[in-house]
Amino acid sequence: SRTVSRGANGVVSVGGVDVKQLAREHGTPAYVLDESDFRARCRAWKQAFGPDADVFYAGKAFLSRAVVRWLDEEGLHLDVCSEGELATALSAGMPAERIALHGNNKSAREIERAVRAGVGRIVLDSFHEIVRVAGIAERLGTRQRVQIRVTVGVEAHTHEFIATAHEDQKFGIALADGQAAEAVRRALKLDSLELIGIHSHIGSQIFDTSGFEVAAHRVVGLLREIRDEHGVELPEIDLGGGLGIAYTPDDDPREPDRIAVALNDIVTRECEAAGLAVPRISVEPGRAIVGPTAFTLYEVGTIKPLKGLRTYVSVDGGMSDNIRTALYDARYSVSLVSRSSTAPPMLSRVVGKHCESGDIVVRDAFLPEDLAPGDLIAVPATGAYCRSMASNYNHALRPPVVAVNDGASREIVRRETEEDLLRLDIG
Ligand code: LLP
Image 1 (cartoon, rainbow, N blue to C red):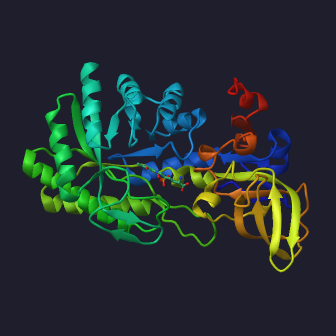
Image 2: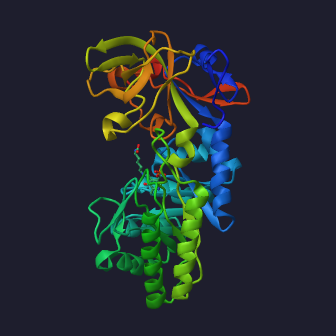
């Protein structure tokens, strides 16, 4: 995050608070989130896209009531993909018209709750859902604003993309074989739906803008077909999330203005060529906003040098607070943050305390040879998809999220307690 610095004594501070104090006050492991960095990233996205676009923060990356208030204050919109995320957003006062509901299998209850709350849009993900949302809106006597999520046949990976006709996955309605056009036909016939646009999301942790450009090209192609067939120009397109962040120094992500310029350019150019009014663009970054704003603070426990291999450094958390390494073979870096060291680097693997050999937090890293139990180490870029995917494996208590700002720290999500754990165990 942007306010990290190392003091003369070698102790690292963030948001004006040093990590030893954070560990004393909040314990370890803990996710430490830099509030001013979070807000700065929200503003950078807003500014990059300008007043004619909307930035929906993807709540799945990490959501809490404090985060919802920050988003609200910074003028962002919010994408939720479950009733739990919707409830969190509403309870923190996010205006419903700035919320979008996603999901490939929304329950009738989720849909009804969203329609009753008055969410700004529901993103329809299947033919079944077109009928289901229309039925619920009709019963409630309202007209629901919706987008249709299409799969454009672009599989985006970190540095390259593959353009295909079909995508072999569960989300959205295929552009291929006229599926999406048929979905639009059906949605336009239903009085309780107001079709406001087309949605596309091509993947995650993407560095190159070319996959988005191909997606935008194909979505505009559909808008043109819709205009030609129905005489209707849909006013919005959403190009999803997926912009990558730097997990290690090797990663080289694009800044939001780079992606904003690329998307605006291609949409404007293609719409002008097709004689279409340029639609309002929206995007849904999750990781790119919250990912870099937090690190996980761990205390070093046992240290096991394996001759000729590497040193296993155990920390007081693991796959229960960061499943990404085990699940995706994700890469992270790590640093000693509670003191300085001039000892030579040793090849290390940072592992957790769970009963599983795949319980790895950082696969390959260099830590100083004089590392000792009790030292604090930090794993950066854990703001996205870590707390939100945390588990109670081995009855671990999920760590708190500690927000730091202007020399002060406070828990915005508190540490789980044994009481929390046993509360659900009613047998
Ligand atoms: N919009 C839609 C419709 C999405 O499905 C997603 C992510 C986003 C926006 C936000 O994408 P982002 O900007 O955060 O990349 N658990 C995985 C990531 C799953 C992403 C799912 N959808 C991980 O830890 O890498």
